[in-house]
Image (cartoon, rainbow, N blue to C red; front, side, top):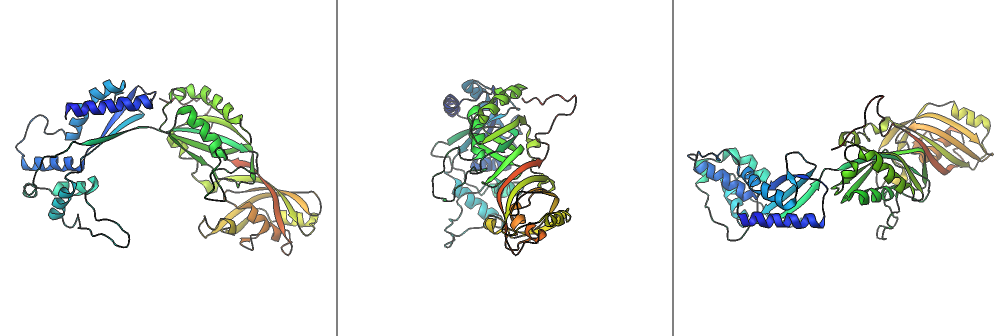
Length: 428
């Protein structure tokens, strides 16, 4: 525990916080020490069991943490603690003896550390060091006899280090509506090599505002299902949750502040065209993880504007409606075969109502099990969906297709409402 090294680390911490400050007043310290140091600590304990000083039972890593805590607290201006949403991870590296350490372990435990050869087909090099996990597996089998075979050598160069601040993620839940038939849910382009246009997706329109507001380094947009680029999301919207990673600013969403802060964020997002969000609130991780649980048990409602080459009578509509509720089987649609496993999926159509516009045009309102491919249910997808709406209307010799499709409801209470008398969640 060289004091000059501690000061060097402290100065680097101070520099990093000046460049990218966090509004936390505390931090947890985590040290990642070289494997070689851990090995030497084990070997010394085996060679000198007569050591019985006060610190013998205290692992070297704990002693290191104790040596750094006070100094780092001073340099960072933050209080070191055992409970904080901000973690400082310092990784020390000293690879000078990695290869000789590996050779020692391979000699002592040949079955655990097999001598690798370079694979000329995969171009993978033989290992030159061991991992902490590998060392942990043999720690209990290292005895004094094995330890005596190790040749201790002092390093000839200083240990290097890197550091990283990481904050617990913030989860923001809500619902979104999409009013454009040209806006994808996530960044997408037909040409993989074409440069993406910033902000040209629902996820970017929502996440970019949140990331800027809270200084997040990254985000993840999770939804209950998804609509195609040419499908609108109407009604009260589709449930979503955004995971904001490594936020530098969380004071506005601590305690009950998030209630007011997220109203303002909602207004900012809704000032953009093509989308609107509602019910924006902060939720704990365990609740955010429940959004996609039981996905296929949910129900969704759709409105499809359809065209039939052959004329359709009122009697045909009535006959099709009489078959509901109905279980259909859908093979993976042709249009998504590159992205989905080839499976037969059973889905249920719970309700179906028609509005005839003329002999060839009609609207159909459907309530279906989540995961139903609506477009394929209407036109049959070359017989891959059975029965299809075209079959139910007895126009399979002609052609029925969707001209426009809207999602009108995703039947999920999200974000979950507070029970009567239940106070809002406070976040630290």
